[in-house]
Length: 377
Image 1 (spheres, rainbow, N blue to C red):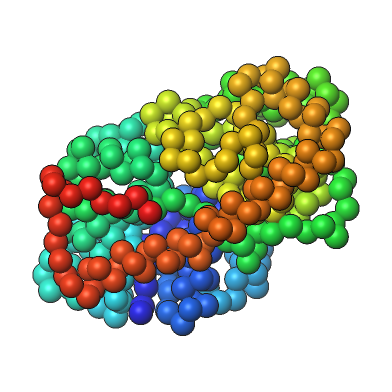
Image 2: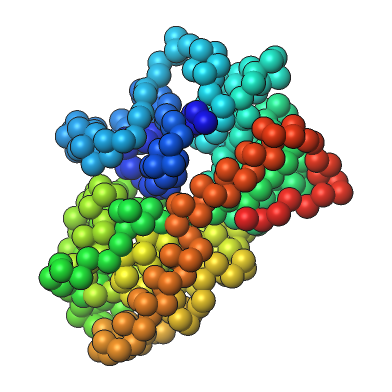
């Protein structure tokens, strides 16, 4: 089949975690013999910021690192009718322009032979509800939501015809253990500051424990304000700025542990949704300690795959324990790897996507949202 993905960007992962997941899904589709193309606006926010921050070299590096992936940029005069006319499945990400979202729906309604899906991987359904409510999804075949809590939001609001849970996952062709890499640091955190949605949590669960334990700590990510950089420096934490996602496995391999610090909207309003870094870190075999979040869907085995820290003191204690006891670290990494490899790879997500698509393309059946609860995959 021919898959077409509308996305903010495939070539840029600057403050754009969905690019990680989409690259893995597209690579798996291509590996299975399907065609997959990403369409992104030439002036996308992520792409422009990446170029402003790093120049054009990362764009060229993407082409070398992911030679099998096809990405095309479009401008206002782009012929979207021709693009979707050649597709079997069109997946439209929620950061796509609202007018284009509606336009693609009309093309589906007016004789389009492709299956049309809407993909939401953000918290705007709760934090900016009116923006999502204004989107015209009436002609979309189904919605893919990256957590059960988000799926329920769509169902309760009546957004879209049918809604499926489709979690993120790890691209294990990229994210895997690298035991040959020498450990040069104790703790690494790879995450963006972003809109003050976890500023106090970063201080509580990263900066203060690292300072108390005097750990060799590195932070990578973007959008750190001056006050945050000052706090990192005062704690003796090295800040490295943006890192290409393709380089993250080695960054994990060079350190002995990492932490997970979810954004506040997910903790407070969308339980069960971790950041994609949990999947990626566990796939790399690095011990992970997480700030509080509710694994409402049982994606992982808390206490085995990773450890939960209730507060800053707990984070300090657990980091000390993991770094001082190689047996504990080894047991955690083995458990986390097992969970990823058996449940949370991009191959698993492609299986789920193909099953959903098949039900629409083979039968064309419709379902009543009032009486039928879609299976959460």
